[in-house]
Length: 284
Image (cartoon, rainbow, N blue to C red; front, side):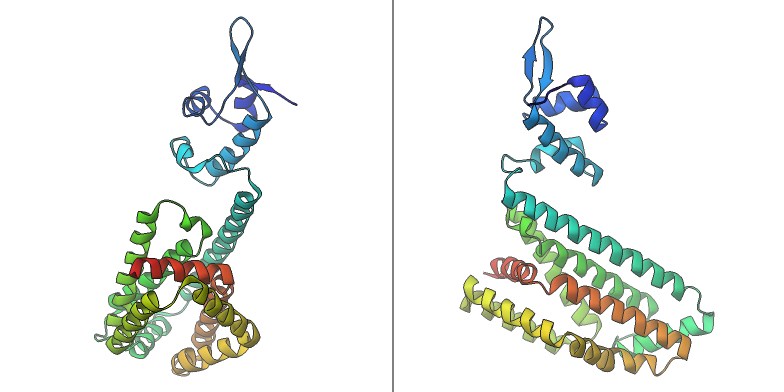
C-alpha cells in the first residue's frame, strides 16, 4: 500500500490546497488523519480517485462539477469500459472537426466567382423557398447542431438518472429536424416521419428496436461503399456537375468525408440503439 501527504497530492495532480480541501468536504477524498497535527494521509483509493478527477479536469470540467460526475461505481469495469468508449468517441469527433476546419480553409481559397457559384448552386439544389445565402448557412449550422445532439443521445451515459437532460436534447432534435424539413420545403417528409416515429413509440418494444438496429448496421457494413456511392450520385453530383472542376472536386471530397464520418461514427449497434431508445422514450 502506498500513501501520500497533502503537499505531495497537490504537486502530483496540479491541484491547489483549496481544491484538495473541497474534494475532502464533498466526500470524494477520504484521507486518514495521523500525528499530533493530524496531517492528512491519502491512500491508494484516494490516489486512484484523483486520477479520475484529473482526467475530467483536463477535459474541461471544474472542481465544482466533480461531485456530480464521480460516483462510487467509477472504478467498476463496466464504468471504465464506458469511459474508454466515450474518450475514443471524443477523439474521433475532434479529428472530424479538425478535418472540417481544413475543408473550410480550402473553400476560402476559392475565387469570389467560384464561391458565389457554389452557394448559388447549393441553394438551388436544396429546394430552399427563398434564394437566400443566410438561410442556407443557417440550415448548415442546424445540421451541425443535430450532429452534436445525436452524439449526446448515442452515449450509453445518457441512460443515467438525468432524464430531463435527455428529454431536452430530444426536444431540441425534434425542433431542429422540423426546421430542416421546413427550410427544404419537404413538409410531406416531415409528416411521414412524425407518423412513423409515433407508431414506433407505441408499437415496438426495446428488444424489437435492438433487432432492427442489428439488421440496419449489418446491412450498412455489407453495402457501405454502395450506400456512399449512391449518396454521392443522388445528392452531390447534381451540384458538382454545375461547378468548375476545382470547386466540384472540393465539394465531392467534402461531402464524402462528412458522410463517411457520420456512418462510421453512428452506425454502431450500441450507438444507434441508444439513439432510438432515447427518442422513443421521449415520444411515449
